[in-house]
Every structure is written in structure tokens, then in C-alpha cells.
Image (cartoon, rainbow, N blue to C red):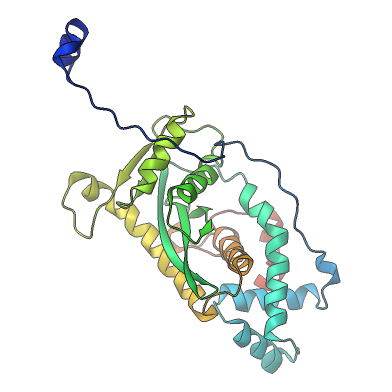
Length: 286
């Protein structure tokens, strides 16, 4: 209502018919209340390969987007190391389990330019969705849950992962998505807990409204992230288990955030770890 209408409403509320949209959420999830999960780590010293060989395998499999069979063939024909494609997958899964808590709980200190989108991934022959939320300025993937459904619950969890990365949620925080209504519903869910942020939706492929015109560059940035992921994901031909898809995504995010130089960051990695800076090559950094 305008200021004049608000004054009229205070004096004569019966002159107005107000309509409310109310949605009740029946999910057992409390925002920003991360619970400590049981570690699902593997003792990497028990693997039957040296740290250098393990680093080589991860470099080929993750950095260069090779399939597990291509990686095994390269290790055998170039490095003279006999390893099966299943062993490549097992090693990748073991490393992913160990580094996932570090990746998910690292204090990234995001900027205020956050965008998100979903992309496809195949698990057990069925399409699933990856919910990427991305810091467009610092080039950091903040959230990456996998779900069989493109639903509000997963959107809530993806947003919760993202918001938990802020030490203090900015009062003017604005998140950019497409026209999918699940993010608006997620926004209402957080508002019920007193957690407020704005969402701008970029609709369609052309700038038919002022919001789309202003925020489309951010939407294009998240689309480029999707293309980068699909380039690395395509050789896998999908995954036989949900855990396998999570492991692959964990390694992809680790590489993207901590190991991959970005041209827009003047050739630097998004998150600089001093422990890695002095190491001579990529296998050693893995």
C-alpha cells in the first residue's frame, strides 16, 4: 500500500480487503543449525599406491576430466603403473570422503554477488539435479547438493549451506536465480525464522524486464559454471550410486575452489592455501 493508503487503512480498515498468501512447511529442518556429522573418512595410508601416484590419478581424473578407464590406461601406458578403472574410482571416493568436511566447512567469506542454478547429473540411469550456488566475484562454489528432485527442500538446504558460509548475513544480501519458484518458497521458509535476504529472478533468454536486464550477467556466470562442470562430468557417463555422484562433485569443487587457476582472478586460485603454494606440481597439491 502507498503511504496515503496506509493512513486510510489505520482510520478505516474495513474499507480494504486484504489478501494473504500463506504456506506451511512440513519439514524437520532448522536453518543455520548445522549438526556435527559422523566422519566418514578413510585411512589413505592404507591405499596400495604412493601419495605421488594418488596425486597423478586425481590430476588426470579430476583436473583433466578423464574417465576412470582413460585414467587407468594413461597410468599404465605412460607411467607404467598398473591400476584398474575401479581402483581409480575407489581412490577418488576415499579422497572425497576425507576432504568433504574441509570443503563444506571452510570459512570462505563470500562476497555479496551470489547466483545459483541447477544442472543435470545421472545416477543409476535416472536424472538427478545438482544445485550449484556460486560466488560470482570470488569464483567459489558455496553449495552443491545432489537431489533426485528439483524441489523446495533441496533449495532450502542449498541456501542454508550458502548462508552458513557468512560470518554475518548482510542486510542487503541479494541472490540471483532463474524463474524457478522453489527459491522464492525457500526465501519464505527462512523468513519464518527471521533470516531475510532478497531474491532476484532472471526470466527467459531475453531481457524483457528491468530485473533480468540488470542481473543477467550474474546468471550467465552460473551458466558458465554449469558448462565447466558438464565438460568434466560427461566422460563419466553417470554414476552407479548416489554416493559416487557426491564423491565426484566433492572432488570437482575441491579442484575448482582450491586448485584451479582462474583467468578472471589473474591466474590465481579462488582460495589460496599457503600450504599448497610452495608445492612443485599438481599431484603434490592433491
